[in-house]
Length: 240
Ligand code: ZN
Figure 1: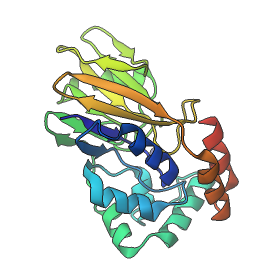
Figure 2: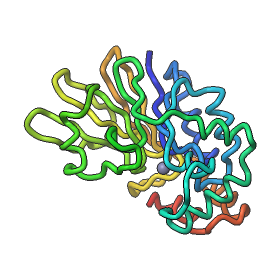
Figure 3: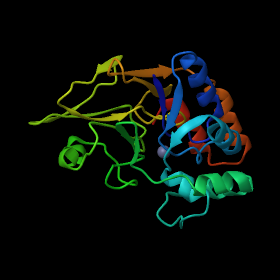
């Protein structure tokens, strides 16, 4: 049973639609790693899609911020402005949905789903030094995470931690631990503007990293038309 693994959709309906079209027929269930809302201009359609289609999902920090669960003091101005705008747009049902999303890590079958680090949902796993200390804390050999918006992840072998280059297909070996980031659907920050996602096939022990072009003009113009900070539109073109 292959899984579609999505993270950081960030209310970007154009990117989500392109991913679903690209992956059509290749998966049975959808698993989400949080941040459905924030930054983009379509929080309600993305929430409604998730309510209908996602089999399992954990919350992200923006899901908490946009549903009024925390103060925006620590957020950068553009992120805080988008959280306020999003909170004003969301239907009561979608606010309730976001506010009730479970905190990761969430065990699904024999692997884990988390937004940031398995030890702290808000912590960013960017460097080898961030990932290495987790070797002994991981309870599953495979953990999917997001939050950094950087496709790839880490292989934690007994002696060393290595970065995973998100090129094509990753074969999971039996004695290693893996932290796998599918990348961001709706706001990539790894220098590639295309929407990122992954397909996990447990029977073959394979993770396939994918990128797909989407209608970035439309997504960006909706952000500008909504009166959201224009930097949130501009960054979609550069993937930063
Ligand atoms: Zn995010």
